[in-house]
Image 1 (tube, rainbow, N blue to C red):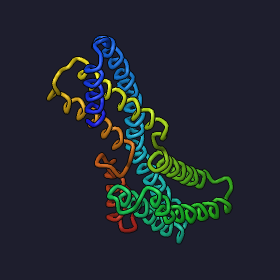
Image 2: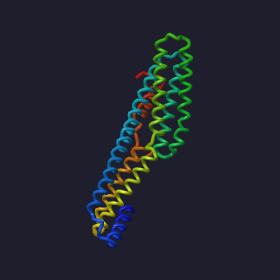
Image 3: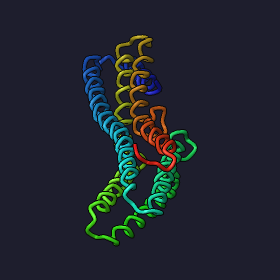
Image 4: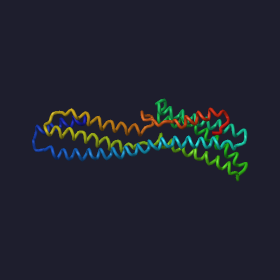
Length: 250
């Protein structure tokens, strides 16, 4: 709105000084700049929408990976079997606590990485246990399957941290996008001023429309926005593991 108003006032000043500048060329320039803004909107929205879908998919994949490791832990000898189940439950709870804290704003995005230290500690303990059991029988197919499930768990964890906490729209894109939007809105106001027209009531709708799309893009880009990725698959798995009470068969 400030850009439109500034452009409008400048257009009125230029119109009062001279009638040489016509509305049509200004309109063509404004249309070209707004076309670039729309192009940037489409590209940026595509990036964040794809990343949002990736975050949802990784939640399902992590739940499946934890479930697989949980089920394959049946093949471990006691007391490692019970300890593995306890560690997997602790890992799941630590992951959920970290994600929910970031989503609700209880922890910043930077601190969210620090809150994952507990989950990574559980990962390390699970891996050490798996290595110790694998060394007892290096040719065991069962041990290989369990180790494979832990590898997958670690890889998905790293992917969730990278996609959810670390990857963002680069600052140069926001700067260029913001600059183009300001220029486009100012040119719309300038065109109205050059035409010696009164302030149109349609201007707020133009500004609000662009602002809503920008707000949507910014929300999709951040896990702590109002568009949160549901953690229901992990919550359901946690409930199933809790209900099992030591008998971790499905």
